[in-house]
Length: 97
Image 1 (cartoon, one colour):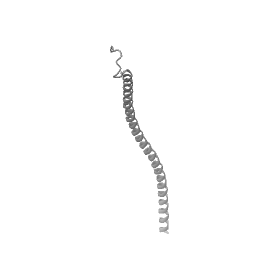
Image 2 (tube, helix red, strand yellow; image 1 turned 60 degrees about the horizontal axis):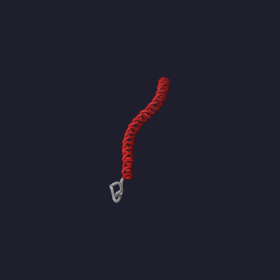
Image 3 (cartoon, helix red, strand yellow; image 1 turned 90 degrees about the horizontal axis):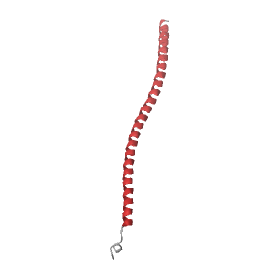
Image 4 (tube, rainbow, N blue to C red; image 1 turned 180 degrees about the vertical axis):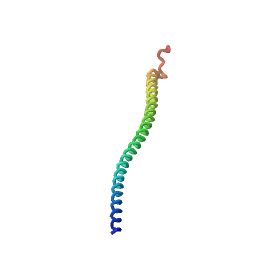
């Protein structure tokens, strides 16, 4: 009878230990889920930083291109004015002929 009592006590101890480990496992699953969410947020914030840097670079390129386009447009207007005011080589009017 003694070994049976001993086995029953061990069974109860193991039952308590199993319950405790089961609760610990549930807590660890919740913690894992929370950490995964935080990791996603960290990854997203890294992605946001990367996109902000790319946005800054693209804005700088757009500003440079706008400046170049403005210069080109101004030079085009000046060239058109010069072409309008240009005289034909054979036009001798106002030279006294």
